[in-house]
Image 1 (cartoon, helix red, strand yellow):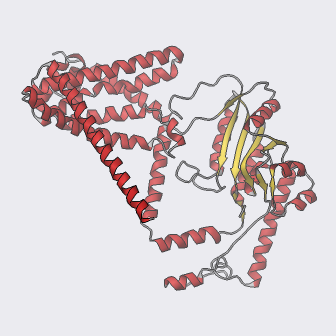
Image 2 (image 1 turned 30 degrees about the vertical axis):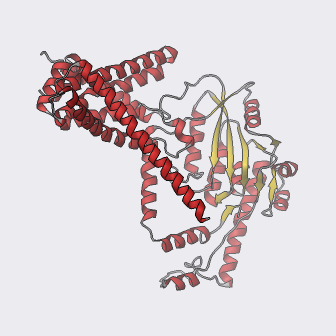
Length: 308
Length: 194
C-alpha cells in the first residue's frame, strides 16, 4: 500500500494548531466578534484583597483582576463605556486604594452599579467613578477603618502551645499579644491617618467638601436611598440604568450591554491546579492549626476597610 | 508498519489496516491515539455554560478524560465477551488496539470547531456538518475495527454494539434503582430516629 505520510502529518499539524488556538482563546469560540457600540459590565464581587489575581476557589476582588479587565475594556474600540457592578463589604486598604486609582485613571466613562453591598472598601473603589447608581436597598457607606487584634494567649495555653518570641524592634510583635498603652496609641494614629486618606479620597472622587464627608464618615452604613440624599451616590436603579447612563456619557444612544467572555480553557485548568493545591494543603492541616490560622487571619491583620 | 503508516491506513484502507493492527496489537500507540483524540475533543468543548454551577467548568474535562479511558477498557471487554455469541475469534488486546485507532478522526474535531467559530453563519453550518460527519466516520470505523479484529460479519458487529448498549442501559438502570432505594431506606431510617 502506497503510504501518504504527508497527509497524516498535515492532519496532526492542523489539529495541533487548532487545539492551541482553542486553548488560548478566552471563552473558546463562543465569544461574538466585536461589533457596534457597547457598554461592558464587569462584576466585582467578594472582599478586596491583594490575592494572586488568578482564577481559583474563593474569588476575591484583586487589583490585578480589575487592572486586567479595565485594560481589556480600554483597548477594545467597540467598548465605549464601562459599568462596574460592585458587590463587596470592603477589604484591605492598599488593595482598595490601588483599585480606586485604576477607576480614577480609566480613560472611558465608568459608572458603578452597586449590588447588595458596596461598603467601606467597596465604597472606596466606587467613589472615583464618574457616576454611581445604587439600588434603594443597597448597603453602602461604612466609611471608616477597623483594626482588630486578638490576644490568643489563653487559647495557646489550652492547646499546649508555647510561643517564644525573639524580636528586634520593640513593637515587632504588637499584633500577636496584648498591646501596651503606647502601642494602642500608635495603632490609633495609624488608623486615623488611613481614615483621613479615605475621607480625602471620597471627597475628591465625589467632589464633596472634606468636612461634609467627615460628618458622614462615622462608619455608619447607609441604604441606597439615604446615600442618594447624602450625595454618596448619584442615582437609584439597577444595572440597566447604569448601562444606559454610561452610554449617555459616551454619547451612545442605544448601547449594547456586553460582558467579557469567561477565562480560556487553559486558564480554567491552571486555576484548578492552584485551587486543588490549596484544598490539599488545607486537608492535611490539623483542625486546631486551621482554627488558629483562621483566627489570626481574621483578627491579627492590621487596619482594614471592611464592614464588620 | 510504523505509526504514520497505521494512521494513514485507518483513513484510506481501514479494513486492511485494522486487520493488521489486530495482529500486531500496538496497545501503547492505540491508547495514545485514543487519549489525544479525546483530549482534542475536550479542548474543543465550550464549558462556559457550566460556569454558573461549578467554579472551574474545565475541571469537568479531567473527569471526562478519565471516564473516557475507563470506558474504552470496559467497552472492549463487553464487546469481546458478547462476540462469543457470533463465534468471534479475536482477543482483547487486538480489539483494544483497533478501537483505539478507530478514534483517529477525532483529531479533526478542533478544526471543525475553529471553522464554526470564525466563519460566521456559513462557518457554523459547515462546522456542524463536519462535526456530524466525523461522528459518523468514527462510528463506521468502530464497526469495521470490531469486525476485523474478531473476524465477524458487519451485521454481527453492529448487532453486538447494540447489545452492548442494552447491557450498559440495564446496568445503569439497576444502579439508579439501587441508589434510589438505598437513599429512600436511608431517609426513612433517618426520619424514624428524629
